[in-house]
Image 1 (spheres, helix red, strand yellow):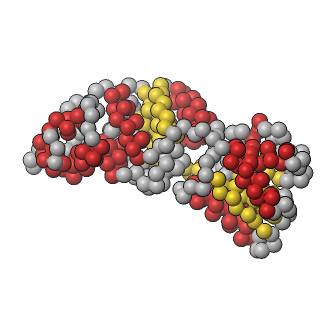
Image 2: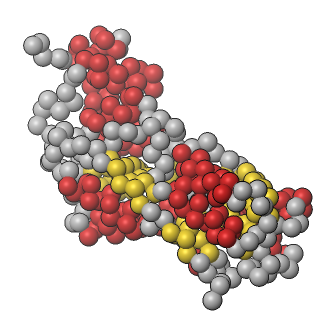
Length: 333
C-alpha cells in the first residue's frame, strides 16, 4: 500500500504542502476554510499525524472549560478537576472560553498541541454537535479525551454526565408533594441537552400531578441573578398565587430570593424556592434547597478515564459515566 504523504493531503485539500505542515505543527497562520480542508483531507486520506516518534508526554492535563459569568458551577468544577488531577500525579493547564463552541475548542486544541499533554478534559461544550474536523483533531491527538456535561453530539468520546432529568424531577416533584397549587419554573432559554432534560423532568412531575395544579415557565436569555429577578417579578405580577419556585440554577434562585425579599415574602413559609447545582444555595440568606451536583465525583470519574487510558487510546472503547444528582433540603428543620 502506498504511503500517504503530505503532498497527497495537500492535493486533496487544494492547498500547498507548507499549509499542511503549518496545520500539523501548529505553527503559522492558516485561514479557517483551508485549515478545515486540510483536516478533512487528513481524515479522508488516512494520513497518520504521528509518523515520526512523538515527543515525550508530560504529566500535564489540558482543561478546556466554559467561563461562566453567571454561576459558580464551572469554577467549582475547575477546582475539583485540579484537585483530582493532582491526586493522580498530574499538573493542569486551564483554558477558558466564554463561548465554548467548535471554533473556540479548535483554537484551544491547537494551543495544547505544543505542550504534549497526557490528556484533555472538556467541560461545557456549547454547540449541539462536534464538527468533523474537530472530531478528527481530537482523535489524532493520541491522548485520552473526556467531555464533562453538555456533551451533545459527542458520541465516540469518553463522557461524564449528570442525570439532569432526574434532578429536575426530584425538585419539581418535591413542590408537587408539598401541595403547591401554583408552581413557577425559571429556566435558561437555550436549546441544549441540559436545558431540554431539565425541562423534561419538570414537565414529568407536572403531568403526574394530573391537572391538580397550575404551572408557569419563564425563560431567561442569560445566566445572571438580575434576569432571574426580573423573571420572578413578571411571573408573580401576572400570577400572585405562586407559592413554589424551581430554578435552572442557584444563580436564578438568588434572583428569586431578591424579588421575594423586596416584597416581604418569606422563604420557605410563604414561597418555597429550589435551586439547581448547590454551589451558591448554602451561602444564601436564608439557605435554599437545591439539586446537588456531585462535582467532585464528576472530576474523579474524568481523571479515572484519563489515567486508565494512558498509552492505549487506539485500543480503548469510549466510556460514559452518568452520575445521579440529589435534592438537598434546607430551611425545613
